[in-house]
Image (cartoon, rainbow, N blue to C red; front, side, top):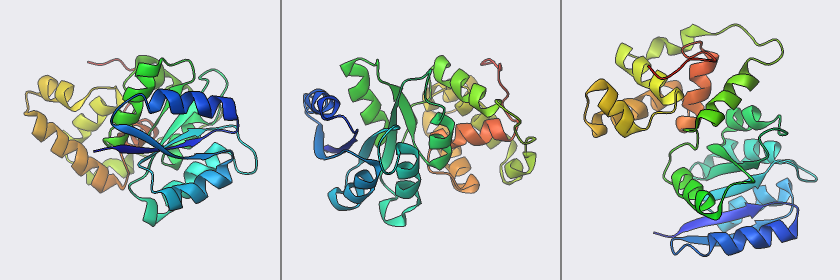
Length: 224
């Protein structure tokens, strides 16, 4: 199955480079390009892309606002947003994840990493497994004067689902979780999916945010 990609970046040269990389993969296709967040939202609705590769800094409507509009549209429930970012500068990464983005990728990524990131997000997984990414999320969650953790949001989960949620937030894949908890991989996946359903989130990226916001996982926690 071909993965349909929408490019959203206000720089034509960058879009051209991204198109060349993406279309070098036999299973990826660029179906549209947007030079602004507003155009990205419009094209997401008309081009029926599977993945939107979204820059944050764009005119008219920025990538964060565009992400919110796309993920809030029930007609676009199957569309995944992958944020392009420079880790040290973009202070909107956590906001993008809260808005429904499925993850983010640094602009210094290699072509192979870009292609694999798109495949990962299109498959419904979150691009959040790297140690640096988890550290970044933790840093933004604890910046300023954050609200106290709301542990009640986890009341809908079983003890096993909480255990699985914590491991997801620490970057473990379904296979890793299955090995750690001595489960079948399909069972681990079922627990992850049930947690998403009960918590009302779109994907693993949102699970990570909930895990930190609820205090289930704290900055500095290491994989047990």
